[in-house]
Length: 113
Image (cartoon, rainbow, N blue to C red):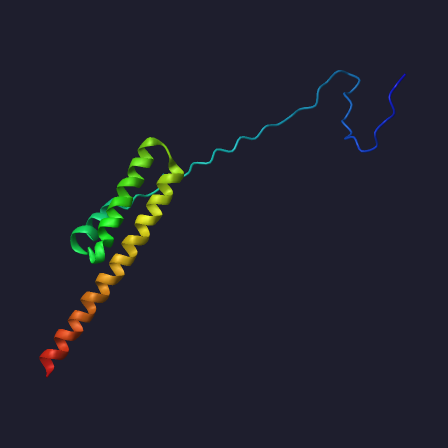
């Protein structure tokens, strides 16, 4: 006695009568991800030349953390710490640039008077 057919069941193709099996092609995709950046050189320059409100120090700390995570193999952690170091480097560079630019303007304006 055969069980009743389920109309919602998936239908599978039947094997050909000759015994030939259908050809299945496999595709392999290899994705090479770039290693996360740690911005250690920029952090060193921010620390030594533009350590405004200790932002250069914070950037250096997160850069070292990113490098350590990359060595251990935790690429997601390295990416997070690297992006934090990148943010601190940008803020430090912008603030130091504004400070230098405003200092030049003040010196020029004082010499003119």
